[in-house]
Image 1 (cartoon, rainbow, N blue to C red):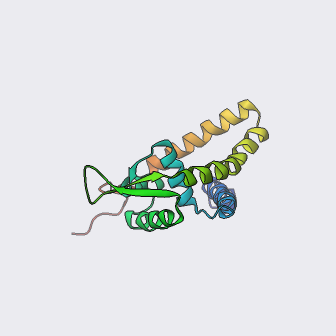
Image 2 (image 1 turned 135 degrees about the vertical axis):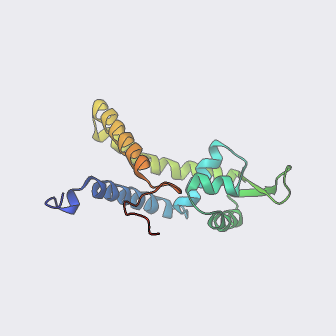
Image 3 (image 1 turned 120 degrees about the vertical axis):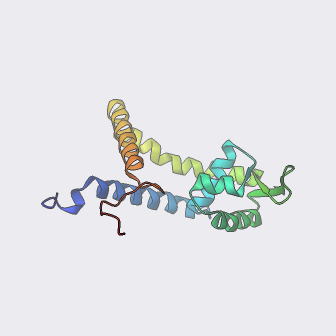
Length: 159
C-alpha cells in the first residue's frame, strides 16, 4: 500500500466524507443557534421524550460532564425542560419543550434536504448498493476497533 497515495486510501475517503457531512450539518445548524450535540439531543428527545443526562450522553457519544453543560444551556434557551426523576431524586429527566420541538422541526427540514440530495444523486439501485457498502464498512470498522482487555499488541510482553 506504500505505493498508493494516502488520499486514495478508503479510510481517508471515509474521513473526508465524514468531515464534509459534519461541516454541512454544523453550517445548517449554526443558523438555528444549535450545535450538532444540541441537535442530536432534540432529535433523540423527539423520538423518546424523557431521558436522563447519562442516557443522552450515550446517545450523543459525549461524556456525561459535557452533556450536563449542553443540557444546562438548552434549558436556559427554553428548548428542553428538566425535572427530578420520580424514581431517583438526584437524576434529572430532560424533556422537549414546544419551543424545542418547533426549533427541531425547522432545523430538521434543512438537515434532511441533504438526504434528499443524496437520493437525487443516485439511482435507487446505486442508493441501495451505497448503503450496503457503507454498512459493511461500518461493520469492519467496529470489528477492527480495539476493545479494553483485547490485546492489540503483537509485541511479546516484557517480563
